[in-house]
Amino acid sequence: MAKKVVIDSGHGGVDGGSSGNGILEKEYTLKISNYIKKRLDELGIENAMTRTSDELLDQSTRPKKAQSFFGKGNDVIVLSNHLNAGGGDSQSVTNV
Image (cartoon, rainbow, N blue to C red):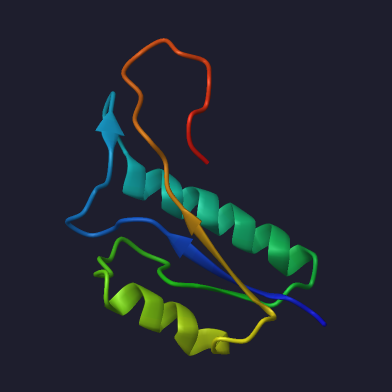
């Protein structure tokens, strides 16, 4: 069964997400999501994005929009991109 991918760029609009050094999470999640979309398109994998611009999707709208593309089938993967701001010099990952 072919998989379908919904790409969710975390945050957006007035919700910038985490920030540091002048970088907003919402900007990078969208850049990463656009790259993933491009690669999935090149591979012929059906996909859709919850947002393609700097817009806010609230917590009730986001899952509804994700389901609106392909429904709730077992052949749908939802990939939600988020980044964390770090303040230390640690080189370990404590969450995935």
